[in-house]
Length: 182
Image 1 (cartoon, rainbow, N blue to C red):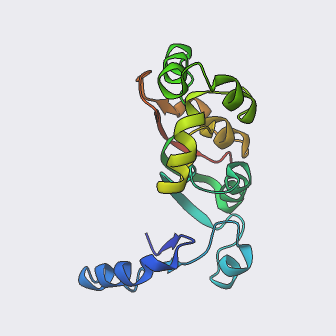
Image 2 (cartoon, one colour):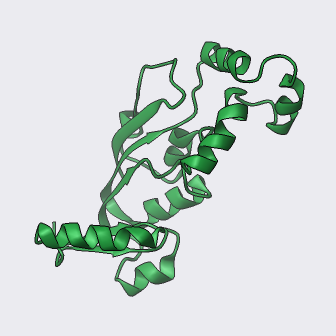
Image 3 (spheres, one colour):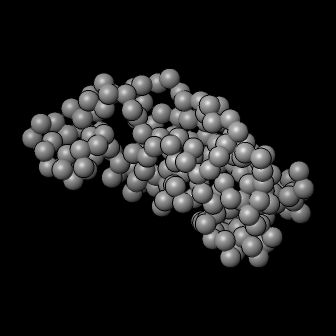
C-alpha cells in the first residue's frame, strides 16, 4: 500500500482524523478528501482518475448516499481492472413474513391505506421507520444495495456477496469483496 485516500462529504471529520493519523504517524500515507466519490473534479486534482484505484472500501456508506446506482458506477470506474471493491452494508429486508409483521406493528390498520399510498405500496415497515431513521441516522432502509452494486459494471465474482441469514432484522447485512473484471 502506497497511499490511502478517504472520501467523505462531511468535512467535520477532518480534525479528528488528522489527530489520529498524527498519533499513529500515518499523516504522510493518508488524506481525507471532503467530497463524494462522484465529485470527479476534486478527485482528479488529487490524481484519482478512472482505473487508478486498487481498492475501494465502503462500510455503511451506500445507505446514506443520494443515488446508490450513480455512486457505484463511479466506484466501478475508479477501480483498475482486477481492483477490489470491499464492502459491509445493509439493505432492505426482503422476508415477506417480517415485512408483514413490521407493517402490523408499525402502522396498524387505521392509517395503513394512507401510508401505503405515500410509500408506493413497497415494504410497509419502511413507512414508519425510514422517515425517522433517515432524519436521525442519515441512512435509507429501503434500498436494494446488492442489486445496485452488481449493476455498476462487470465483476469477476458476483456470487461472492454474502447476505446475513437474519430474516427478523430491520437492517439485514450484506458484505463481500468483488473484483472488477479485467
